[in-house]
Length: 261
Ligand SMILES: NC(=O)c1ccc[n+]([C@@H]2O[C@H](COP(=O)([O-])OP(=O)(O)OC[C@H]3O[C@@H](n4cnc5c(N)ncnc54)[C@H](OP(=O)(O)O)[C@@H]3O)[C@@H](O)[C@H]2O)c1
Image (cartoon, protein in one colour):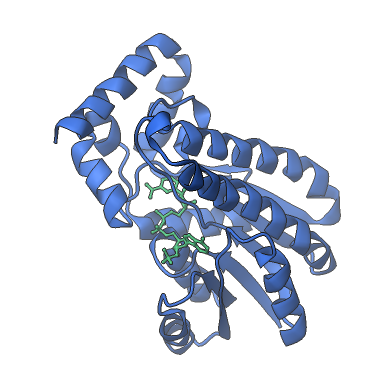
């Protein structure tokens, strides 16, 4: 029986993507940090959508976590045909004010965990082709972003990694898609940033369930890049032709507005 494996599935976009996959009849494996109610979420999804579900609680910033998840999947004899690398987090503030531990954790989760999970599961995905990988980056991966410096840079990695892998894996029947959401009101930190972030942040808001629907369905259609929300697609076109000096002014304004509020 085939399964979709989703990281960061306890809340936000990850949970919505789990629900969306289940609504399409896909069996689900949910991965998240311990003590996040995954057992209940997993059972609720199974009951509501009449699919098979299971869960594994682990801190993905740990070096061996991807290997551990892979071993668990093998032991349980689950076949994976869809991997969703969704877990990630971002901060907001001057780089020098972050502790190095915080920055390293962001790199461990956003970059290393995505890379390791992909590496461990490619052989499995090849075996179960046609299969899919969806990597969650961000709209922010399109330009350097002062005061979100490491987060934006980590998502640039995810973007380039995904786009390159798509070419490498195409001939093996694995379709690799890149998700680039704009502001999505999920956790309290993001909601707070959206509220305080001024026009730039608010214009692109899309609800998590809408992002998830678009992300899952378009990945299964084999689309290379998924940008949920017409406002995001429009603003991205605009931002790409805007001189970076002007974009910087807009970002700095947004930052000042967040600091003031
Ligand atoms: N929200 C936005 O505006 C936005 C925009 C663009 C891109 N994104 C990207 O979209 C993805 C999902 O974001 P979201 O807003 O839905 O986030 P969220 O609501 O904060 O959920 C993040 C998920 O990742 C899990 N997670 C966090 N750290 C983990 C760790 N060390 N090990 C295992 N799991 C961990 C969380 O588990 P816990 O429940 O234990 O915290 C949670 O399930 C991220 O990659 C983010 O960068 C978000």
